[in-house]
Length: 331
Image (cartoon, rainbow, N blue to C red; front, side, top):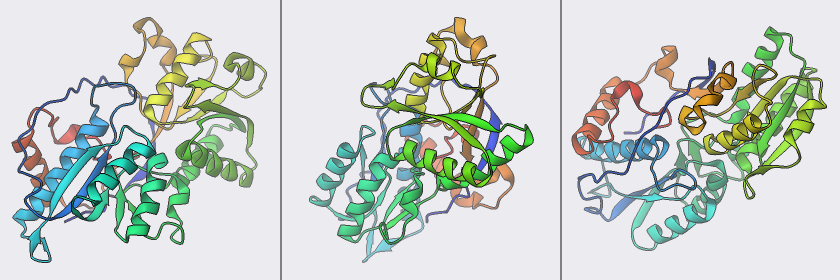
């Protein structure tokens, strides 16, 4: 049984966590015991052979949910639901390749994933053409909510359009009137930049400059120090995923435009061990805008199914189970 998580945007102090998750062999039940399967698409960390919790945790919960479905005797056309899990590399071609390979070898009745908006737009279109549902657990690009374009696409996390209200309230609370937005040039970054720009325009707030982080070259277009030194605002909003946010912050550290000179607001949580320890003091005072699960704000959810899924995960893959309080929110 799938449970729709209630995600809400919340403004939190920037908290760094060290991730030290390595690949480990797990002994899950055979996924291909049924001809009817769900395909799970999960993202590896960019440019690294190591698996992060953003990849490991959702994949484990995906498998746990399907094992749980057997315990509840859930069937399609008289058969239990099997699965195939694939790593996409975090890019659209990887996601499409894995999807095509799966649908030609099995009766895929649905897709869970992919994680990133740049992948989801392609997979959502594919799902529509094949008339199967695709349900992403992390893609937040606003255009994916267009039911005419993506009638078979669903998600368990809210659109980035939901973040505009807390951002506007934050600026109003502290009497901030302008900012610089740094965004990655893909569906996620451009979509977030667009909805924030529209919200600012409607509330008489100013975006002094838009700065592009090119995910192909992995560099900011232009000189960041010159860009920020020629603006009157000291508020910087970064709309990028965790990997690219860490690269942006490293560039900012190199040219010394972080604290205490500027206040940075991030859309993604970044690991503290991404940076040299001598620079930690300059990373103090950041804010992060992140989606949280409903239980954090006392919204109702099915504890019976959730705890059962955790128990299954711990049974079959104990080496990656972090404890129920440390499971990645997207999982």
